[in-house]
Picture (cartoon, one colour):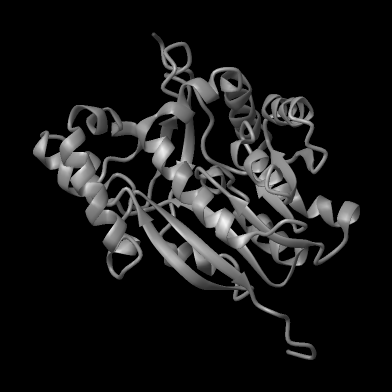
Length: 293
């Protein structure tokens, strides 16, 4: 199967159209493929646990990169109002249909890339959200993350929480695994590079790749220029395979369960919380100091 050509990672129309088109393609199959992936299921469980302990009924929260709406609908069913955004029109349309089918009137959808969320200020006003979240590395796929980082603090009230899973520059598992299978160059491929990654494991579209930028926890937090404080950092898939190697979870189930038990104990502790294939960051909006220079 020939690989689909792709534009370079950059803030231009061709790149965003490529990403949008890719997720439009996989919208019908996402819940049956990516959502059933062993690694994907674990990451989603970790994110939902964090969301459920953070947000309460009656609050309004913003989702950036909603995909098929699994988190948005789960929160809405618990009484949280969700404004779900995504670059993919087909993903956004699917979330809206799911919400209607479930009788959920507290889900509102918008077709917006991460860097475009500032447009929501005109609709809802400044400091109008009680929190926000982004799952699955959606922020890794927007070259204009600086525009996102400038807009998100304006939408959140003081002390609001922003939760996100971000693909890490470091991966302990990859660093150890790839030399063992005689592919040492892949062990450090994340460092300083924009990497094209497949957006699905579905056979029909598995050659469709999107250039992606990886961030260390420190570099990611620095993009917000002091608007947030880090309250909790947890490494994900530290001792377990990342998404692209999820087949090993099924093949080595007993070993994977042991590794998961270790990771559950150590994932939020230094230095392990910076060594996962992804990290889950819980950030708190810092109140603005009036009159500050």
